[in-house]
Amino acid sequence: MTRHFLLLLPVALAFAALPVATPSFAQAPSPESWIQDGKTDCKVRNPAPQPRESITWSGACPNGIAEGNGVLQWFDDGRPTDRYEGELRDGWENGRGVATSTLIADHYEGNWSDGWRHGQGIYSFANGDRYEGDWFEGLRTGRGTMVWADGARYEGEWLDSKPNGQGIYVDAADATFSGNWSRGCFRDGGRKLAVIATARDCGFE
Image 1 (tube, rainbow, N blue to C red):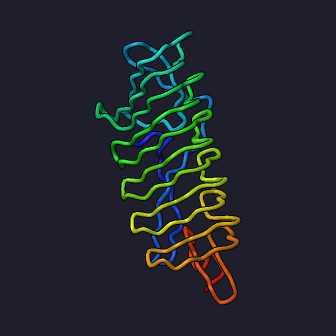
Image 2 (image 1 turned 60 degrees about the vertical axis):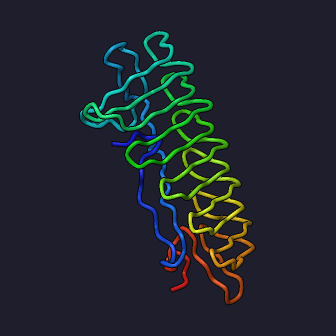
Image 3 (image 1 turned 180 degrees about the horizontal axis):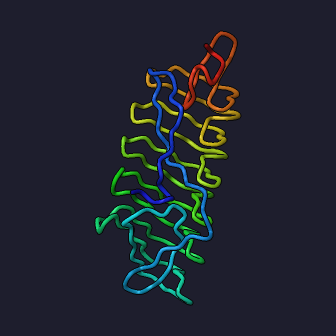
């Protein structure tokens, strides 16, 4: 089972001809939930507890809580799943860190805040898609660039992991859609496009 920093949640698909990356979104942290390293008894936050899971933590552990730089490895029934290498504070991923999922082969490197991808960071998807830019509580929000494996590209403003605001999308055939976007929807006269959204979401149907 993947941990909270790489959990997959459903995302609406765009037009079939358009590339759509399925983003991994952080699950809402639960401050009441913890998990202990079985050998050291050091605790880290565990907002999405799963059966048969366990951890190891290589860093410092003042007052029994993981702190500072180290490697946090998650296991499912003894098998390695997700790995976080970087800073922890009060048991949360905080500061700079790298998270890698063994199960889905996604990779994130960048800033964290209380268990969320938050600030600047780069997310590399297993299928070859890549996002580099701003994050807010686990979602692509702010300015960023998404490059799909087929060569399509969006550069501009984001909100809740969808193009929103001023941006430029260039598809794999070099057609360009530049202007204002609203939650993945672009409309400029008779030109319409949905990216990380459906035609129905955009009112195109």
